[in-house]
Each structure stands twice: as C-alpha cells, then as structure tokens.
Image 1 (cartoon, rainbow, N blue to C red):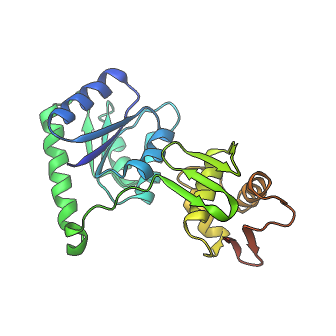
Image 2 (image 1 turned 90 degrees about the vertical axis):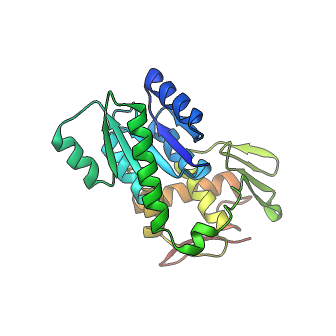
Length: 237
C-alpha cells in the first residue's frame, strides 16, 4: 500500500483528499502545517507528498525546498495560484508536479500513480525488492537511562521527562542514533536546516550547551556529548 503524506491546512479540501485516497487504497497521513509535515516525514516515511503552497507557518516553496533536501520521493504541489511564475518557482525548488485548485480527484490519482510508477522504476533493483524496514519508534541508552520516543517526540533521562525545542530533539536524536560518529558543525547545520531556517554554527553550540544541561549529570564535564576539538561533536555511550 502506497503511503501519501498530505500537508494541507484547509479542512474541507484536506478531508476530501483523505477520504478519496483512502477509498482508493492509499495509506494517508494529513498534517495541518509545515512543522507537522517535517516531523511526519521521518516517522511516516511517505512514498509521495501532496503539499499545499499556503500554510500558516511556512512559505510553501520554502517548505518544498526543505522537503526535497530531506527526501527523494515525488512532491505534488496543490495550489489555487495558477500563475506560470508560481509553477516555475515550485519546479525550481524540487516539485515534481503542480495541481491547480479546484482539481479533479481522478486526475490527482492519475498523477500520483504516474509519479509513483516513475519513481519506483528509478530505484535500484535491490531496493525495489527489499522488504520495508520497520520504523523504529524508540531509542534507548541503558548506560545513562535515556529513552527517546520518536513517535511522541519525547525524551526521558533517569526517569525524568526532558523538555526540548524542536531542533534540540532532532539534534539529540541524530547524535544518539550514530554513537561515536564525529559530526562537524557543518554536518549538524545541514541536518537541521530543513527544520530551523536560522541555524548556524553559533546556534549549534547553543543547542549542544542546552542539551548537556538537560541530560548530563555534570554539564561542565560532559560524559556523553563530547566535543571533538577543531571538528565538532560526538555522542559516546
């Protein structure tokens, strides 16, 4: 069953698309804003994205550009703007197709099927035949009593719930998923850029400092989030 991520804040259009695609045997997840969409991209792992250009928290083409940097799956823009300049900009930032509202549900389905067929043909043969890997929902580090729930986006350390910003959560998830790997600040900036448009080297250092305060027993002498001088950071178990 193909998985479609719908990022659409209009309830009427959103519900119509969800109902239609579910009846056509697609697995659909709808998000109401761009931030939800970015989170769902990791957790839901869609085969295709339907993206409205007008959202409450993101400029549509900016979000499209961020999504394209994070996934190769097809992206179809749905918009009430039929200007050629808007379409060209959408294609420039990574969209694969553009549907103008109002549109036929049958046409939408046909375009989805064409893009999915084309995308699957471009995948390596071994990837086409592979059994989908189950989506991991939890990460645990017994040595420090750390638990990350990827679905609920929560972090517990030594039995205590830790409050974090969106970028802090993405940063600790990345570090914990790849222990001992040394990340340059540039690597971390690129990893967070889709979520935080204001990220820079100074912001990375601030996030690391905040994370140490929240999870380390002694933040001034960190045991787990280590600085690799002149390079960046790594997570040590």
